[in-house]
Image (cartoon, rainbow, N blue to C red; front, side):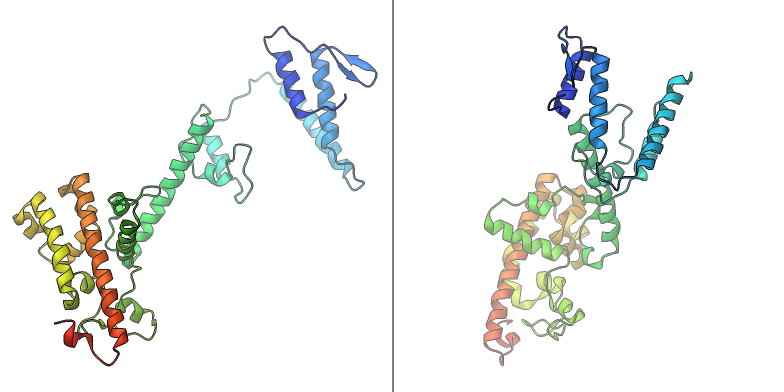
Length: 330
């Protein structure tokens, strides 16, 4: 055969096995013309078998012979068996997937063994389409990582304000749903997200990890320990900024639930801080649109407090011998 290829092989097989009346007239093997479709397939079989055998001198011929004998015996056994071959059960397929090796290359459909292992119970008796299978794998992977995320977040003290019931991999947090894709609003979201996830650098965190040999005392008021509660609700240096944006948030919430419910739910600072950082903790009292509105107002509050704090810290840095509490915090 001259220039045999895989594409040509499958094209001939489909043509000879299909319902079309067009047949391959012949294949020329050496000086012989092969007309029979079965013999044509045998020609390709011999060619690809020969192509798969390395031609270097170090090839183990005995091992090849043993493999050939084993394959021949299995083929003869299957052909001579009267018992019908039973298809693999779903349980057997799932068991086989569990024992797949990880860290390997993907297959021709760009699916790796990790995706198959994460598929869980979504395998169907009938093979789904490529797109459906990818969607199922993606959903299973997201579900697996969501369970891990929720389990770990419960143990993290830095994530005590986040609503773990609303956490999901592949699902954006309400902080980002409530804001537009403008630079100013993205910056607000970043500030709020840092506070919510415990990565906002306060004096308490600096002292805890011995950063710059800092103490816990707020550099603005020089009276109390500076944590998130202090910055958002207590620091007297940030009082004027807090009053403007906190009152807007409070009015928005009271318009929805009423003053009596406000007093009942948010009669202590811990509940108010929880509302500001993640209002989805109180989702049963607010609709989705109301949650978005509250989240945006609280994001504005957090970011404006952050900007004012930054501005005051820059002033105190320029006047190191003068305490901020003496003038600024009055």
